[in-house]
Image 1 (cartoon, rainbow over the protein chains, first blue to last red):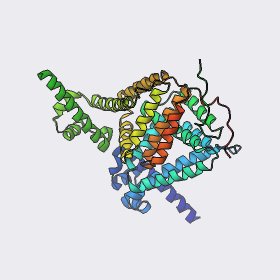
Image 2: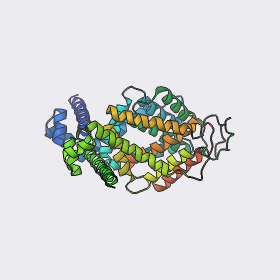
Image 3: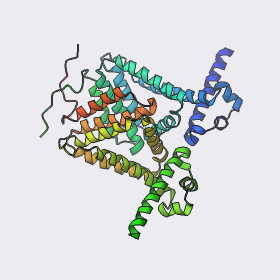
Image 4: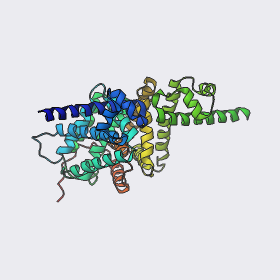
Length: 202
Length: 202
């Protein structure tokens, strides 16, 4: 019981430290000191070093945590009754758009993007993000859609999130239309550009 | 002649100040002082204030400049021999992907995104970015493609740029495939999800 309790405590402290690191990097960038992070978290520098022995370890932990949170958000959107091709792409689209609905969505996007912009040039952080990218690529390759289709749907979902960085919260009607279009595109499986030209409207 | 010369000098000083402001915001965030920007530019604070009377004016000038540079990059990609529907969408795609080709492309994306993340929450900056967004929307509405098609192509191009923020420089073969797919999608004009289901390959 004592061991389980101290594991819980350790997990809680780690969470506190990561949250403090996020705030510190957002305010001061990647040049922030470990002392400043410890102060922000209300722990001693020794306490911080016990969990994260270096700045590299802290920043890698922070980015791992961001990437894991996103993976968990997509997994939470997987529909257990959906076993058709495109199941993962649909969950990905729903996760991104759920994040864009709240009034403070532009703030969330800004936070994530600022963290990646501040830390992404560090070799260990870049390596984690690339590893995560390869994992997603492999998962989408097994999702049953033509690669053109997955790529387009995923990149368009990502791009909608980026747009909120420039334009603030996007108009709800526009968000719904884009989400529904992306979901509809996952309901077919073939390539996207071998289709016959369609007659022009009007 | 003297007047033309001093206009040129003023434009040159403005350029120096904006470049210094970019470097200062990248290093210190939106809390950077006008003194620090003036120092970075090698001018007096009075000299800076003559061109940009406040921090708001400086940051708005900086973001206007970023947005104008992007507009100019798209205009440079407009093909004078292309008068088919989707002409603007093709130029947009070519401009984004041209920016992603160089070895330092992730750095460029990081720079732009960091600036928008640092400054985009300022009301005047947000207002400019939203105005710019409306201008693009109007231009795409006149480009002759079904809105579903423009939205998807533009968002997917934007999302490809964002991916480089997470994963570093994207693999050239993957970039070419995505660009060609997006360009191909602008060669038809109709909606994207009223199409008939296609036979699955294999």
